Image 1 (spheres, rainbow, N blue to C red):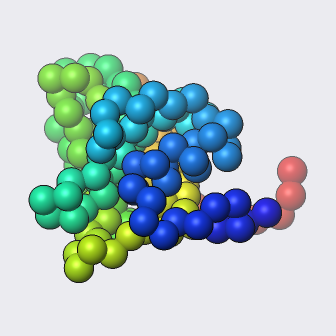
Image 2 (image 1 turned 180 degrees about the vertical axis):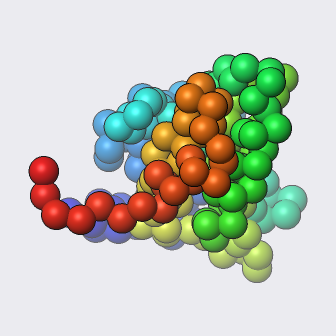
Length: 166
């Protein structure tokens, strides 16, 4: 059943819509405030913490998807290089490294000017894209930081196509 068939998004606050989507997928979530929700989404590599926040001021639904990393200090320059390479390959958001929190972050802002409202499929796709990007590049980040691979070589893992069946 499509998400839009379950409920109408007319005049529903964007974070209410996010809550419905989390319930639909049976994700753990916490409504932090009227304009913010946090949820946990299980991936292949790890569980991702996703926060969505609505800003009425600039009519933007902001998404951050985070996961912890503790790279050795001497590998941070290589981590920044692989981040730049990853960001060159994606269009629906961007990675950044929050060193103080030891968090890798995927960020995206959906601008909905003119009092537009997002649809449930749009928000579901937004969350899915964040998890997919994190899953895709997680191995490259790990190879650079822990296996001490060169960023150019590590990013090849993320862009390699799988052929055949296992």
